[in-house]
Length: 234
Image (cartoon, rainbow, N blue to C red; front, side, top):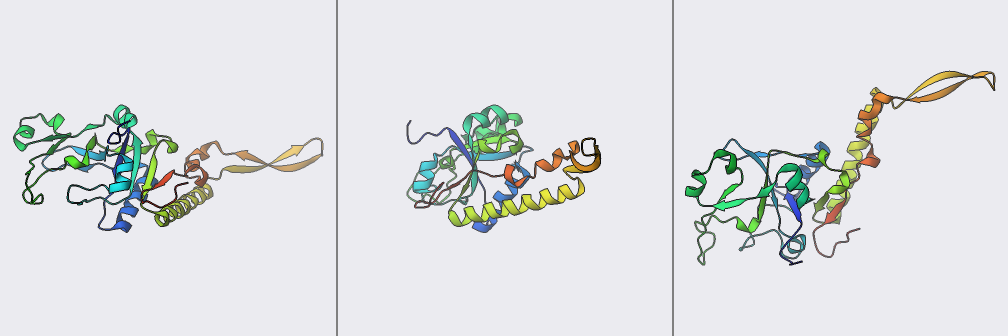
């Protein structure tokens, strides 16, 4: 396959710094949702993704012609087919303002302003985000529509990988324990054993406890990939 093509889509988190972007990623994972952001001058809310190949991001970063970016190296990667089929995701349309104004509101969610200045000073009066190779989803991306192994979590290095694994385990362990205190997984009852001619204590599974199972730490282990070179991916 051509190296500039990809069957994946990535949603990168933003933040004033890496720690803030890390917390935003953690919030996505525990809430099982990428919440959409309201567009300027529109009633639509969207989630943005990029189809930039992962190997390109690893080698060169997710940056424009001047090495500028507003994104941190934290995100979630999906199969493009899933975003297309399940969430009606589509490529963004890079258009001039006059073109966008002529469109109906129900298509504007796909549009981003494109007014490039092809000169030596790329930063001056230039509106060109085509380097993002953006896809968009209208409204939220509910991660409950996927199995946990259907998407991959991206972090910059081994340190953040370990921090994320630890924080996720601590969160789910606490939620799981708290839930089972108020809604125990097993009830204990006394039952007569005719062979032994005595009463014995037995455990009966609480059928209403299934809500607690979603917090089971063993069921919330994410696949995590490190973006920086020379770091080990297991």
